[in-house]
Length: 235
Ligand code: 6GU
Image (cartoon, rainbow, N blue to C red; front, side, top):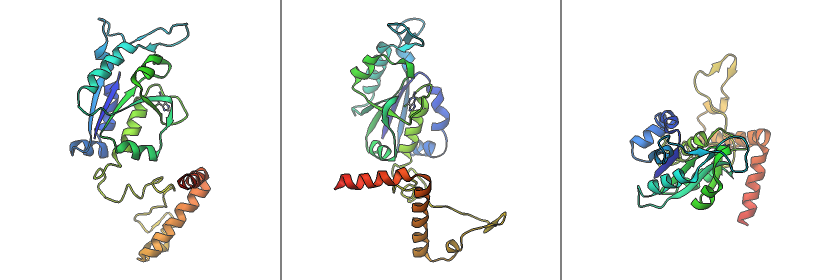
C-alpha cells in the first residue's frame, strides 16, 4: 500500500515513522509512505502558503493554489488514483472499523491542513472525504495523520511479528482486551490468576472472553450498545 502525506511539516513525521512497527513495515515494503511539503508549491519568493481571511477575523487561511498544485503533483507520482482524505476536526470520526476499511486501499492521499485555516474551495475542489480522530481540536492535521497511519499499518498482513496479535486487539471484537500478566507470579502481593497457570487452554479462553465482556460493561458500555446496533443493522 502507498500513503502520500501532504503537509507543511514533513519533519514532524520522521520519528513516528522511523521506529518500531511502522519502521519495520516500511523496511519490509508493506507500506510506502511518501511525504510532500506543500510549501514547495508556493509561488512567490517568500514561499507563502496562507493569507488573511476574507471578511476578517483571527488567524490565517491556507491558500488553495499551492495545495491544489501540490495535490496534482502528488497524484501523478503513481498511476493508482487513491482515496483522498482531508484531516479535519469536522470529519467523520476515525475508529477501528475505518482503520480496517482504509487498510484495504491500494493508495491513500492524506492532507494535513491547519484548523482555522483551509480555504473552503480546497474541500470542495478536491472532493476529499474528511476524517477526524476525535472531538477536540489539534493545531494541525499532522498528529491525526500519524495516528491513522499507525492504526492502519499495524493491521496489514505481516506488519506484526506475531500473526495473531492484531486479531486479539481491543476493539477488533468490539470488546476491550482481557487482562494480561507476565512474570513474576507474585508481584507486591498481587498474584497472577490461577487459571492462567492451569494449562487448560479452553478454560483460559473462556475466562478471557468473560473478563473482556465484564471490563467492557464496566468501562465502555457504549461499545456494547454500538455492537448491538451493528448486529441489528445486519438484520
Ligand atoms: Cl484530523 N485535525 C485537527 N486539526 N484536529 C483534530 C483532528 C484532525 N481530529 C481531531 N482533532
